[in-house]
Length: 320
Image 1 (spheres, rainbow, N blue to C red):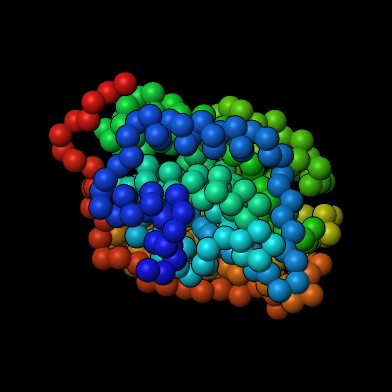
Image 2: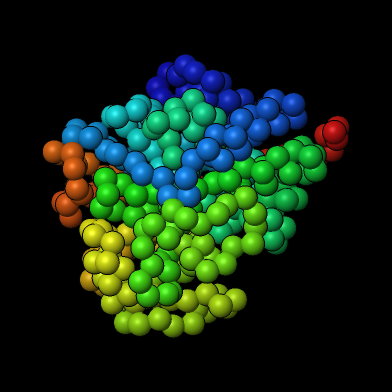
């Protein structure tokens, strides 16, 4: 049987989840505890190196859509240090009905291939969003309040951004609104809580626009839209080719901001089972290693599934 269903603990977990056979509470808490410790030892700005001949795949929002997670794993292939690297760019949970399974599989991947699987935090990896958009209810119904808290302990330790070959910045949301923000400022952000302000808030929440300047976002809450001039200035100040982000639906799976310095990659195909968008994965393949060039980026798009259905059993499970 082909990847991702052949061999290894991750494949065993996937096989269980496919059959709606949820792992028991104690196994889940052990996995999440190990994941929280692993991510806590990483910097806020992770540096990923893609050597010559290797590929780094940027995977956008999954939002609890387990079938789309399987699709992107098949597109990317198995992680292998120095050869095939997977970067999950936030919003693993909420809205879709299989968020617990999605997060467990991604955490298992990160533990099984620590040098080949990376995660950035998304705005939905927060307690308030989980309460509003379904993951809190799902996790407690499938497991228990204590397991839900174990998920939260992972979320607060997730890195905020990944720098690829010193030349491409990958963040979930967008760019800082303040002028003069350096990569060192992102690296200096302290993690461990849900109070995300300033640079951290922008990295998880901001959106691009094709209109120059900074503008209030229709999302509200002090969120800003950043124009192509803001993107170009940030990239030039930090010696970047471009930025890759996720955070909002792109009907074609991916979409470039005017100017070609910022691209949105969204992997939750047919979002919430009815939007009809394609999903996408971005592939970074530097043929000679070193700095990324425009021709080193390519994209694979895929269709989603027809509908999303709740997956947990109606009968309550035992609680811890």
